[in-house]
Image 1: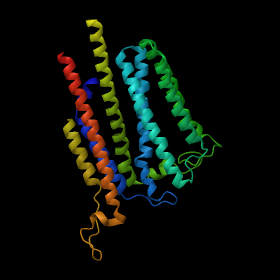
Image 2 (image 1 turned 180 degrees about the vertical axis):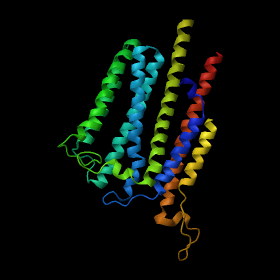
Image 3 (image 1 turned 60 degrees about the vertical axis):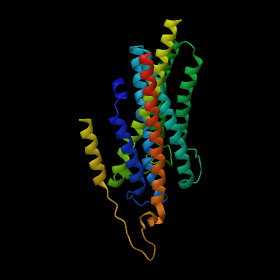
Image 4 (image 1 turned 45 degrees about the horizontal axis):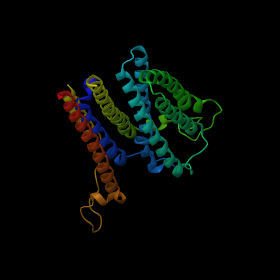
Length: 231
Length: 74
């Protein structure tokens, strides 16, 4: 994994995919739907960002589990920096969703299980960062926050994917409570041609930024080791 | 292998959609950027923003590489 940090091919791929996302996202033909109109193009930004967040937070929980099996500072660095990027992307997801909601549903925020679930999920992840900040001992911080991260990820799935879909739950958000799902748009081939590269591109960008922050942490570890040796 | 992958991907992406544009109209010329309510201007702006941010991430990447190299030499 570390060796990949220094390879440039996937960074080039990130740039290509994201430029394609911008160009294709704005210019490709889209299905003509009432209420949504051109805003369906947000699929490549708002929805793709949420997909990217899920993938990146999955990376995070995997490295938390790896930390518990093999407690190295590096596993902890991976877990916390992927969580950081995931949280930033989640915040962007909430903000972009709010703008979209204002102009299609008529309000910045509606009392909707999907929206509130996403907000609660974000708060749970913010608490992860606060928990880390409150523990001064490095090993204790890494171990306790790894365990918390597993619980946070465990809450993310029901909050975003199960509770909003329960029978009897009403939701404006597509894919929930009897609303036409993502699959209804997914059938459109033009949309799919940009959407999947967009998910991939946003995910790679997130991982790229996480890799940079992990490298900074590794430099800091080396520095503090040298300081300890030199007194 | 990776380079081939990138080349193949570019080829696929480039060939999947080609946007034909209606030249002509009444008087105005070189209309590509003015077509469809000038949406292409917005596309250009968004593309520049994206390129700028990606270039910044790339520059940060290089900077960290330099620090890492310095640290190794010391």
